[in-house]
Image (tube, rainbow, N blue to C red; front, side, top):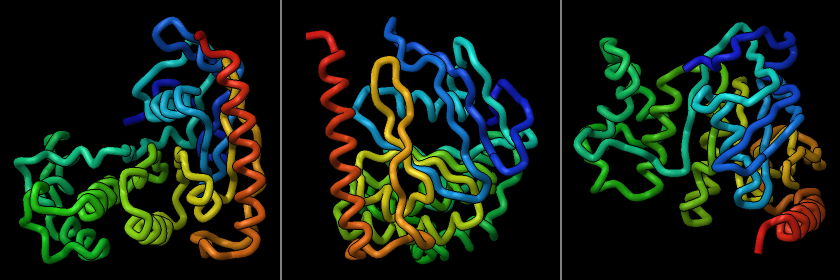
Length: 255
């Protein structure tokens, strides 16, 4: 899907959001919000529940429209979207789910490519399996393969690993980082360590209406080792920033 405000972003930015105003169910979530996503890099977005992270993601995906402001995308590029739930169709096999986008567009699915992607996520032997017999981690790997099948230069991810156990989550973080290398990725997450492992730029969304605060990101390419000492120091700093954002939000929420 292509965002409705099909403007040209600057060449070093894949996406720019400028002066964005958006409300939901009578609440103004953000007003005058600014965000730029650098081409080919991972940007992570954290913040309290209900602050507007998912709404911002949906605006960039073209699923919601701004009340005012501009959304510009380099070359009018379309995006791929991966949600927290795997959203697999229960009556389709793993292979059928990976090919779902093509079927919905009335295109002939490229089964060979879909099978190759399932192999890349370690599920080549499960191509004919229905979702109900797959584990949660396996289902998310199918969803990741489906996202890759769309072959979009911009990938939006809304807490895709949050429901998984710690080890599966860590492995899928590493897998996604490798498979999405070179693409522009915006990842919404509640996990500071996940942001520090994957993010090349990290923002905290806070306030009502919300604004974005830049947080420190570690040096070196992702995925970074969880035990890296630099991550541990930044983890404490990021937790403090998130706690302050949540406290500020609590004061603004109606009681």
